[in-house]
Length: 70
Image (cartoon, rainbow, N blue to C red; front, side):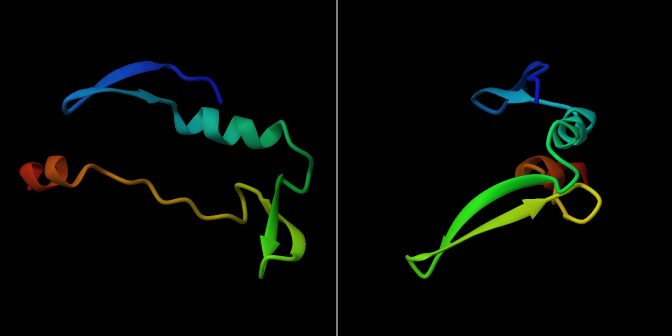
């Protein structure tokens, strides 16, 4: 994912990227999506796959900004 730049965010700057960049990053992986290795119960190893058409994402908003817009 390419960082597009920086936008002001309260007391500093935060990098940002577009949702299009996020979906593009999944295309770089295989047809199974992005494999993430996990260790369960301290010993069992598995690989969990994330794909944009099956995985849900949540977009977070800064709570003080959304409260002032209401």
